[in-house]
Image (tube, rainbow, N blue to C red; front, side, top):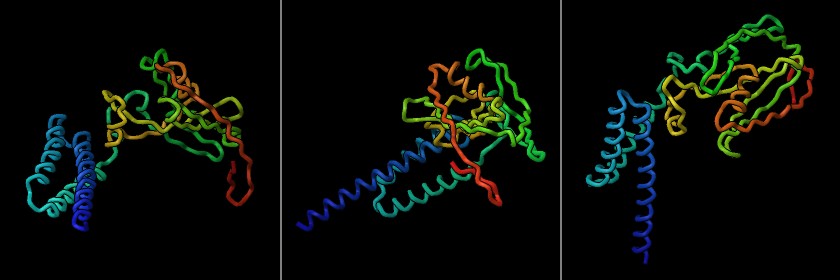
Length: 239
C-alpha cells in the first residue's frame, strides 16, 4: 500500500513540476518572441528553439534532476535579461503620445508644458495641439475621479481631473505609449512592448475622444471627490 501511495505521489509531483516547467518555458518563449533581439523571424526562431530544447532535454536526458537544474539556470538567465531591458523615450511615437509634459513653478503659479488639446474629426483624424498652460494653485477647487470602461464592466481606465476656479479642467491619464505602426495587444504589453506616459490634457480632449469619437464609444463615469483641508505644518487633504 505504501509503495502504491509513493508511486501516486511521485506521479502527481511529476505532473505538477511538468506544468510549472511548461508555464515557465512558455513565458520564456513569449519574452524571446516579443522582446528578443533581431527581426521577427529571428525572435520566432529563438522562441521555438527554447521550447523545443526544453522538451527534448526532459524527454531524452536521463537525469531529470540535473535537467531541471539546467532549465532553472536558463530560465533565470532569460528573466534577468528581460528585467534589465531599459525603457526609452527615443522612438517614433504616435502623435497622441508624442509629447511628455513637464512643469515649471513660480510660487503658487505653475506652468504645465505639453498640455494636449487636440481638435478631433475622428479618433484617428485630428489636428494636434500641445499647449503651455498656467494655473494658480490657490484656485484649485475640485478634483474628479474618472472611470472609463472599455471592455465591459470589469476593466476600467482610471484618470484624475483637477478643476480651477470652476472653469478650467485639467485631466491626467497614464497611457500606453505606442510607436508608429504599433497596435495595442494585452499579451504584447506583458512582455514590455510599450512604455507608459503621463498625458496631461484638456478634459474635453481626454474624455471627449472616448465618449464621442472612439468606436465603439466607451462608458465614462465622473465622480466628484469630497475633501476638507487640514491645517498643519505641512498642509494635507483628507477625503
